[in-house]
Image 1 (cartoon, one colour):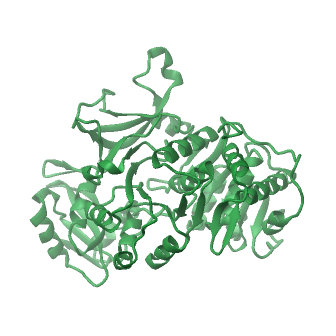
Image 2 (image 1 turned 45 degrees about the horizontal axis):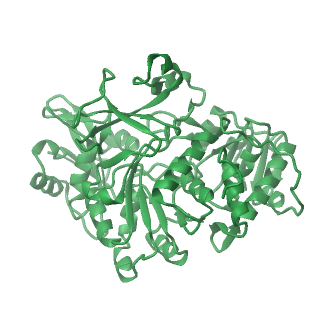
Image 3 (image 1 turned 120 degrees about the vertical axis):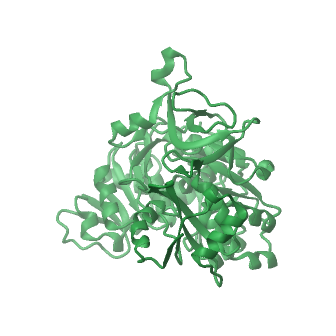
Length: 537
């Protein structure tokens, strides 16, 4: 039984700690930490933060690698009534500066080597992990995080500023595929509802051991932590994404649940022979979000993991999670994103605000408890994305906000949704409208292709010219002409890329997705011949 109603992040933690205080909450390398450890150490950090001026609503940056201290930092900041802002350690200094300045962070929890002068400029205090922080940075005050967490003493009766469910819990910055990263404000209610919904349809329990391969700065990665805390399960932190290291962790840590984005499955499939020799019999489920898994990769996963349930999910940070396709419906293909998650409504809406008929393409609109507050400090953008529910009674519309996703989908006659593409990414060529995902699927059906990204480039003759950027599997390669011929054998002419760029590795965003924005900006360079290989028909 739950002693505390699930209103905030801390109620979920306290419930799990009371049920089984000695159960493993987090595995970090060779060390394991219990729920009692998480409650105790996060309370110590909360008190220390308060002692050094952190007040309810303050934003505190967490600039750490994926490790135990990062988990404690999130719960500790929140227990102090403040808002944690995870900063991906892969970000460059300019991006880190933008986040710090945008949401006015003045206290930072970070590893010492990350505290370069440009990062700490404007910071009042840091809780550092590692060597002491040099005292030459103006009035910057430095405190050892290791010392704080190692202090002996009881936290009983200590006064913290535990939040309520309507308080801001975290600000998640998107990868910035268009313009600078944007901060999306999630309340405790949003975070808890997301954990409740996902853990319910995945059937998560105390016995689950989930591998955390995604960064905590990604809403999908953060949810791996919150779902395990809610059910009292164990989260195994995974930093290396080398196929051999992932496979070793899956076996050694007896992993039952695994979440990834499309490029992650491409990496896992590189270990296909090892998995065939030693099957992952304990892996109960895998989930995909952050993009469509190429059909050939999905087929390979179904063969390679016959006992593992595969959940295809769709979500956007602005509303966290929107739909999922149950494993029993996986035969519908990788473009199918299923139906609305529990306690949520999803519509397909045309440009006039009318609900689309079956098979008609429109924008996905989301209503439910995971709808975030909006964009930090950007009222104009918030109002453009978070709008009154067009289907609510007139008197309720100002109180019932929905998210307009910008994603184009269609619904079949059975109510299942299919992802088509971004509203601004559809390619109109030779009189046809085609989604990049459809052409990426085509390319990935060619045995030699490992990854592909497709986008349109303005063309006076064709409207848009289809451009493909691909990488090949180890030991195999094709020329651009051979690749186009293989596409022509599999699809109509309007889907065959007119431009092909071949790279050894496709660039990734900090959350592990293919960086399409970067590839588009590099296209002019590729066209001039500066990239490995570019060819025009």
